[in-house]
Amino acid sequence: MTVPLSRKVAGKKFVWDGAINENQEQARQKMESYEKNGFEVQMFEEDGQYLVYSRRVPAVQTAE
Image (tube, rainbow, N blue to C red):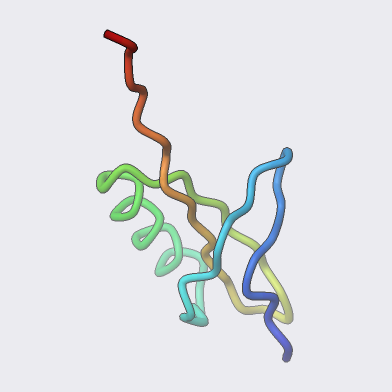
């Protein structure tokens, strides 16, 4: 299986975390961990395996 290193979702670029998860629950646990650390995450299923893609949520900065 060839895994794309990045994917676009709704115009946003997500990058694969490099791991192939054998089940959906394992992927969901990783997604929760990434979300707690300030990432947006997406999961994709390919050939019965689950791939997690993430992107850092930009911090909002206010002009002084």
